Image 1 (cartoon, rainbow, N blue to C red):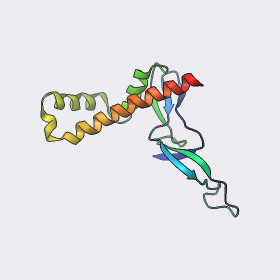
Image 2: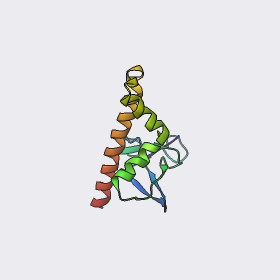
Image 3: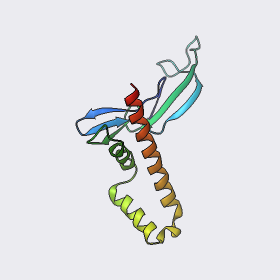
Length: 134
C-alpha cells in the first residue's frame, strides 16, 4: 500500500471508460510539515500546511483503481468501494450468515462488513456532492 499527502482533499476521477481512481482511507493531518523531495528535512524548515489530507491505496499516488461503469452514480461508486475489500461472493456469504443466524458465531465479521458498506455509501455521496459543487 502507498500513502501520499496532499494539501487539498481528493475524491475520484476517471481512470478509463470502465474504471475510476479513488482516494480512500482519508486521514486529516493538522499542521502537517512536508518533507523535502529527498525525504529528509531541509536546512530551512518548510512552512507547515494548516491542514493536509493523506490517502492510502494501491497506486503510487495513494489512489485505488476500481471498476465503475457509471462514474456519476453514487450507488455504482459505493459498490466500487465495497469491492476494494469484499468480492461479491464474500459479501453474499456474510449476508447469508447473518440471515441464517450464523452471525452470532462471528459477529465482528458482519460488523466490519457493515461498517465498510456504510463508509462506502457515505464516501460515494460525498464524492458526488464535491464533484457537483466544482
